[in-house]
Length: 373
Image (cartoon, rainbow, N blue to C red; front, side):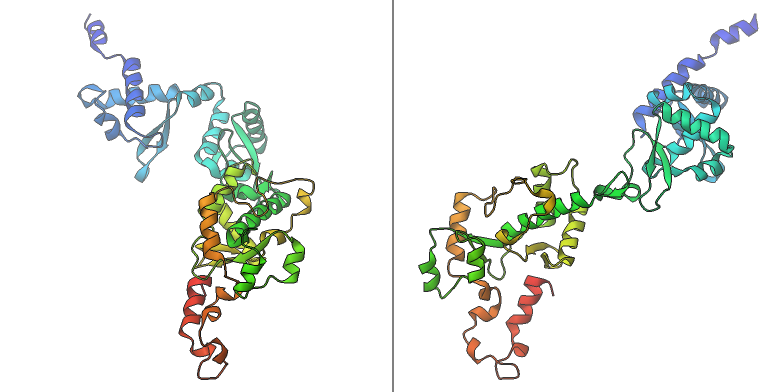
């Protein structure tokens, strides 16, 4: 009779376990590692009853809703598992659960098969069977590591591999996508070129340039007789930045995925090494070497009319901006990029003379400010 009374007064372990799980989900992050004091602090288990807490925790472990781990200093710890993952575990064998847990712990970095063998102590045959079963259920997937050719790693199917594994946007299925790089490099060079050179409109005709003692070279005129380009003056701050280029690339729709600034920065550096761009002010801005009508389209784009870009046209410029640029740039040429073009004693300047490049206080500051030297 006494035993029956005690059982009627004992709390419902299943109900407490369910409440404990919900409190863990609501008050802690999914990656939180729980110790006994954390679970007791939730106030779910009455009177801080430790044996009852262990029963509740074990009930959740049995239902695959908690994962038992070894925490700091070897102390007993738990980690919550989502309902979705718990359903997966319930359909797995003990060996498959062990393999899944190991792969789950590596996150987006993934894990090599040999390392799984070391951590699980499973035989090659059993491990191979477990991996095949998990992959067949779409719980895990295989990824090639670009840094180690031929090395296959495993990770959870729903995760996106880290760039250390895939090589980032420049690799497709573990292979360097050279065509994609060429197309994107052309797009960026052309975009930067439009921002680096000013197109002289038909309203600023040839006689105005002659009045300013400027001449357009014959080679430039042959390239496009109706379009002439002039450089911006020294100190101009409108050259493209990495965020601006990245935004333009993503807006164009030229890439199937969203390009991060880090990847765009890598491509800008490559174009600088190829002498197609020049980094200004330690990479804060970028300037194109070639004029827009001199940028060559790669053969991969032959037959493609445009990529959202038009020669000599900037979709971001308003009519007011264009008119303002024309007023600013009329009468300026390539020589005025350097201080020499505006120097009143330019004709007296000679190496080793009283007025010389070596003693010019403007030239060094211009190199440092404009070219980042």
